[in-house]
Length: 158
Image (tube, rainbow, N blue to C red; front, side, top):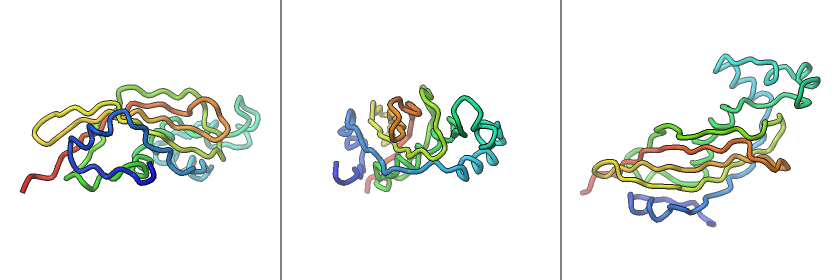
């Protein structure tokens, strides 16, 4: 798709089921970003924040936290689809998350997303399951695969 979708109704979301959106632009995974994530989450494991020690470790350098990669999902999703046609959209959770490959510092990462299902959950509201695949340039396996749940509420009629 040359232009990102801008759905404004549950039906328009349903019309996007099975459509792969993306990929996003490439984003470089920097040590500064990894360190900031470590500070916010209090997860300062050396494999993430100590480049000197990590250089001698199993990956030859620091790697991003798996949850850091997952946390890029909302911003990447905004690159792929506009949500301003709804009264609001909310992150509702995840069904399944896997981290098949580590995320080396300096990697260029991006995401693709497919709307797997759209289920009405009340008047003018829907739960959307999106399969998100995070990939890094030059790495065959995905960094992360997640089933993200979102709740969308239409603007009131009239």
